[in-house]
Length: 245
Ligand SMILES: Nc1ncnc2c1ncn2[C@@H]1O[C@H](COP(=O)(O)OP(=O)(O)OP(=O)(O)O)[C@@H](O)[C@H]1O
Ligand SMILES: [Mg+2]
Image 1 (cartoon, helix red, strand yellow):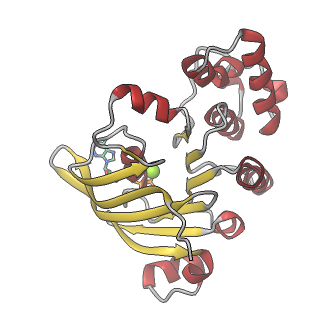
Image 2 (tube, protein in one colour):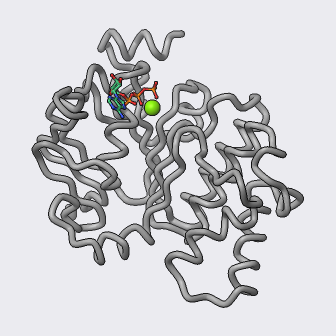
């Protein structure tokens, strides 16, 4: 049998802020075309793990590989090329408030391609329509609701059709109808564009709908890493408690 190669891999990863250690010996493999959900109580280190995976933080020890590249020793040019293939939806959205939604979505296209304006504009309109925001093209972020801002940030994160999408709580604070539409969008990114998705979320209904794999974190450690069904049936107490709420 041929074993699939992980698209993201960490080995014995330790990381933190200044003197405070947060990530404690994390070794995970994430596979292509799967939706992996990172779970765990507030403050356990989920966002910190994402920041290390995408190179926004340098770990204190350990190895990270994304799309076959070593993220610790990567040169700046290669890092920038690699990040073309990586979309990130930050917790809270992080849109630029002074420019319209259309310009926000265009940022990665302007940074990473030499496409002429009319093509960039076509892609921006396409991505906005994917997230149901074609009418918000000229709006400023402040003119959008919280859920709309999330979706606009998602449109920006997928502007370049990345191979990997990291999304930190994409559906937090959304009403159930909008949240389920967002889940369908995430599933279609995987099915139609072949994206690999790494999502942080607490929404159990959303996890049941979209997750292939679960990584459960507790105080900077990985307590569980496996399939959704296995996670649902797990007798690890915090995991059991999480799914029974
Ligand atoms: N910039 C920072 N400087 C110092 N400590 C930080 C910083 N960001 C996070 N921390 C600390 O790191 C720990 C993990 O934070 P992190 O943001 O990774 O948690 P999380 O699992 O994403 O939580 P949440 O579900 O609330 O988003 C927390 O104790 C937090 O106080
Ligand atoms: Mg977080």
